[in-house]
Image (cartoon, rainbow over all chains, first blue to last red; front, top):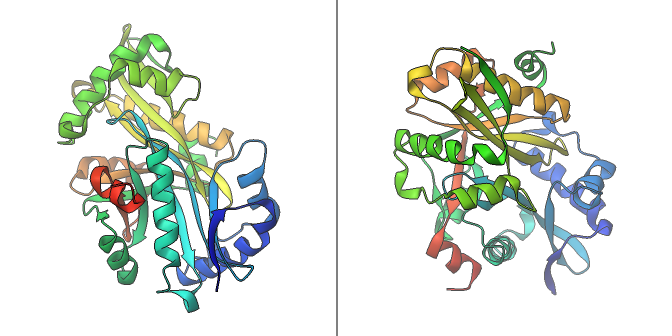
Length: 160
Length: 160
């Protein structure tokens, strides 16, 4: 089997979208999933890309992906790299594809002189936590993510 | 007293850096603080800005700021807005400046059709949690931030 980790191209959008749906199911977040091929193509390859992606290809099929963008640390006064998604098809877990994707994104962070490489994990996803910890990452115990969406966002903005 | 919330300009960099140091002290993170006027100026106003900022001005002095950038949600397939920092001088807490900054950033998120407005909070910072919750935000209980820096990042990238 020939495994390849490479930058995503517009031809990969359909395959990536299928994997994104699988990830949403795994994370029990399908109610939030509204991405389409057009929206994903625009986000990755439009005039003003919002994110970048790598894909893992095996025998000509897209079997995993990593999607990332730059964040910024005030204290470091430097860009960081934030991994929004990393996913490998369940049947191929443990074959090194996830490790290869994570290492490649880390290499991009180093190349671009990012001060930090960060992502998020669900606290019940112990297999992911174990994998990340084994790879040298630290799960920050004390930070929580705060979110405002939809009507609450409109109210906060004073437009509702 | 004339309070003004406005976009930061290069002339605000020195004042903002002073507030950032105060914030690092409050968060007990001064050991991570390496920002300088030059690095902050480049990050906000250089050729390829990594973040944007608002300042709160009172009687001609910078007394608060908010720093933000765009993130991206795969499931929504849309940009979000991430608030990296929000800070108001302790002596001026409770005067509405923090609320005004947060509302203004939320309004920018709505204007730019962001799917989400997010930030992070330390789980021991109850006064901040209470403030955000009152403003309609949700503290996500189950997500944790994962981070790799320095030597661990180099090792993960395979360059150490």
